[in-house]
Each structure stands twice: as C-alpha cells, then as structure tokens.
Image 1 (cartoon, rainbow, N blue to C red):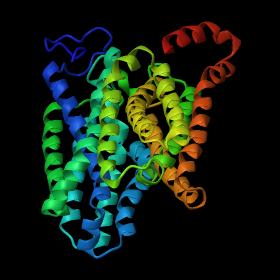
Image 2 (cartoon, rainbow, N blue to C red; image 1 turned 90 degrees about the vertical axis):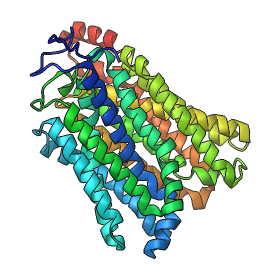
Image 3 (cartoon, rainbow, N blue to C red; image 1 turned 120 degrees about the horizontal axis):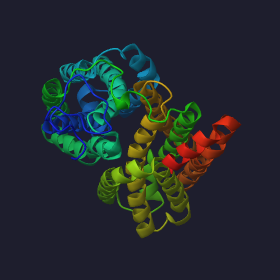
Image 4 (cartoon, rainbow, N blue to C red; image 1 turned 135 degrees about the horizontal axis):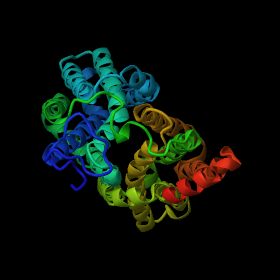
Amino acid sequence: MSGVDDGAGREPAGLPPGPATRSALASVGALVALAVSAFAYVTTENLPIGLLPVIAEDLRVSLSAVGLLVTGYGVTVAIVSVPLTHWTRQIPRRFLLSGLLAVFVVATVVSVSTSSYAVLLAARVVTALSQAIFWSVAGITAAGLFRPEVRGRVLSVLFAGSSLGIVAGVPAGTWLGQQSGWRAAFLALSALGALTFVAVIALLPTEPPGQGHAATGTTPDTRRYWIVVVTTGLIILGQFTWHTYITTFLTDVSGFSAAAISPLLLLSGVTGIVGTAGFGLFVDRAPRTAMVIPVTLLTVTLLGLYVVGTARLPAAGLMALSGFSMGALVTALQSRTLQVAPGRSEIAAAGTSASFNVGISGGALIGGLLLPHTGPRAVPLAGAVIAACALVVLLCEPLVARRAAGPEAHAVRSDAGAALR
C-alpha cells in the first residue's frame, strides 16, 4: 500500500514526525493484524446466532437465553464505549490494543471452559468491554500508520476484516461448531486472537497517546461531528428495524425457501465487502459525499423492499444493494469521524460506535414491536421512514454549519466547504 513511511529514516510529506520511523512492511503488517483482529471480534460477537440450538442444548437453556449472548454484547458495547475509551486514553496504543487482545483471548477461553450459562454470559460481557475500546482506537491507530491522503483506503482494509467476519467467519464458525461442538469454534477464534496479539506487539510502534495526525480531527467541528453521530444512530436504527427480521421477511413476503436464506445472506455479505473496499478511494476524495451516497441507497433500499419486495428477483437485488451500502457506510462514517472530531479522535470514534450499537439494539426492538401488529412486509417501510430522517439530518449539515459560523468566518467556511465536497 502506498503512503507508508519510506523506511530510510525520512517521514513522507504530510506526516508529522514521530518518535521513530517505521518501515513500510511493518506498517502494512500492523494494518493486516488489526484487520484480522476486527474479523475475530465481529465473528465472536455474532457466532452465537449460528449456534443457537447447539449452545442451548449443551447448556440446557432456552434459545432466547442464548440470544441474550448477542443482545447483551451489543448493549454493553453501546453503554461503555465512551467512558472506557476516556479512562484508557493515556495508554499507548501498542500496549492498549495488545492488552485488549489478551483480554479477548482469556475471556474466550473462559467462556468455553464452563458448563455454566452465567459464567458464559459474564465472559461475553468482558469480551464486549474489550471490543468497545477496540473499535474506538483501531481505526485511529491504523490511520496513523499512513499518510492522511490514503486514510480512506487504510480504513477500507481494516473494515474489510469486519465484513469478512460476517461473510466467512460466522458461516465457518457455525459449520465447525456443528461438527465439533460450539466450544471448538470459539477456541479457534481465541487462537486467532493470540496470533494477532503477537503481531500487534511486534509491529505497532510505541508512541505517546495523542500523537500523530490521526489523534485529532483534520477539520474539527463540533456541530458536524454531532450530525455524524445522529445520522449514524438513525440510519442504523432504520436498517436494523428490518435487517434483524430479514429471514422472516424473505420467507413470508418474498417467498424464498429456508434453504435460499444462506445464499442470499452470502450475496449481501460479498457486496458488503465490495462496498467497503471500493469506497476507500472515494472516501479520501469526497468524505461528506461518501456518507450521503450510502445513506441515500439504504433509504431507497428499505422503501424498495416495501414496494417490490414481494417479488424474488427485486428482493434479491435489493439485498445485494443493502450489503454494498452498509459496507460503504462503515468506511465513510469512520473517515468522516476522524475528519470532524472536535477533540481527541478516539473519544469521537467511541461516540459514533456507541450510536451505531444503539441503532442496532433499538432497531431490533422496534422491528420486534411492529412485527406482530403490522406483519413483516411493513417493517422495512418503518425502517425507510427512520432512514429518511437520517438522510434529512445529513443533508442539512451545510445549513447547520453556516448558521453556526459568524460572518467573520465566511472565508474559512468557503475553504472548508471546498475541502469537504
């Protein structure tokens, strides 16, 4: 990847000098290690979904109790992201990230070493605590290894790891769990976490917290940042109002068989990876537009599912578009957060991460409340209304920014607006 330090004792143009010059190979290796860590975290978070009956039978608990392993995980991340990131902000990233991965490995091993549901749930909560901090600092750490000009491409590599967790990690873990028991799947993830722990220790530089171009926003703006937070919460709320009950919609409304669900989810996951990887360069060139496009596409997708989702071919096409849009959105949100963060970037990233997880949990709740009363077909319509609100908030950003600035800042506003377009 272009944009890394040259390895000859010189820092490339545009990158503030650091305490030590890193080689290009070490920077790329560290980025890959962070992407694999993201894969491990996302797979661990969502794997109980695929192993619900296996875990429930082994522990002699209900399916809803196993479902709580996922719901409780997401709620924990939403609640603790900001305070935990604030409390750990003075720890150098190398030590912080390696410590988080150590917690991940130990908590995952503990979770498979027990026959107690309560211990398993507690271990999942501990893993969620480490993930809350991971998502707050991983993107900033990865971006700081490279020049600001390639930030979007760097983030697309990082989030490709999380997308692969859904597309490949969960299906592979489900298969392994069905063949060898659910504990084998989680042990494999703990082994992967141990490998990334070693890579992070070996490849990440030890720098004082708050150093480097990614430590603060490139164009800090409190109002623009809160627009990102609100937009994130609303668009994810709208998307997961429908997406949580995607299987019910596809079988009962679109008429797909149960056997067709996995290929459709795979299609959505593959297009998500395309969106994550393909949007990296565009994010670097037009960060605000890179947010507007996926938010618009998701709104259109949800409305389209309500209008033409009764037909199989349009429903499959909209599934693919939804996956692409979500993949593009994740990269765009992180990049935009690092651009307009009003203070320390990791605190700003924790705020958007919390908003994201609130949207997931809230969407599941809204969809669950609507489903018995409206049926599955109306659920994407409700999601579309919420997503449209997110789009309106995002499109109002220039107006809010103009009102916030005084007349004396007109010249500064004009320059900043040109940079954001």
